[in-house]
Image 1 (cartoon, rainbow, N blue to C red):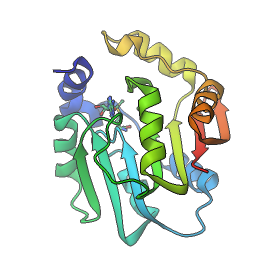
Image 2 (image 1 turned 180 degrees about the horizontal axis):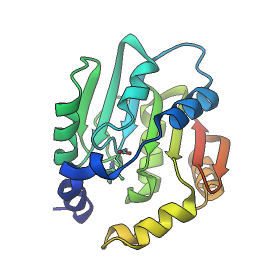
Image 3 (image 1 turned 120 degrees about the horizontal axis):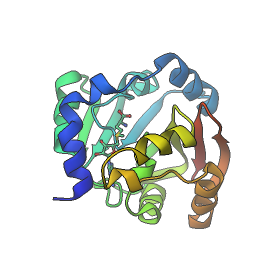
Length: 199
Ligand SMILES: C[S@@+](CC[C@H](N)C(=O)[O-])C[C@H]1O[C@@H](n2cnc3c(N)ncnc32)[C@H](O)[C@@H]1O
């Protein structure tokens, strides 16, 4: 099995006790950065894990909308399905490099605490462009700064110790080269954010 997937399968049962999600802060960022004028019809949460971001994403979703949670770790998805029974949530066991969704069907993609784990970032950017509707948004987000994330990852076993986050400006540049508009970056001690839009 893929060693990244085995790692996350292994920590899935205790993941929720290990992380502290600052829902107030992240909710504020989602509202400020996305400035949603209306609720979304379709949201895709890449590397959703146990669904840490789902409570906030459901608030942004229409009553008849769909929140897709994608993750290659079946154990993470099992925990997510135990925690949520909202009929708008659909879980997909897949890699972001190969998303089993149709072209131009997603309005918002969130990549929360997941970007450094993506093995082939270029392939992911291409897939995000494919599944997004024109004007659709990608939000790459960490609720800690790059230095903190990288120091945590460096202290963990392989392969995670090699999953280091590049600067937000570099990620925006790579995304721009693939065809995205880079709308905003933030890379400081409290926050890491890259906001992209499909033209
Ligand atoms: C650090 S966890 C974050 C989980 C969740 N977003 C959260 O914040 O609680 C990273 C997640 O990314 C997933 N992941 C790893 N490689 C991936 C890939 N290539 N495509 C999609 N998800 C991936 C892992 O299985 C894991 O669940």
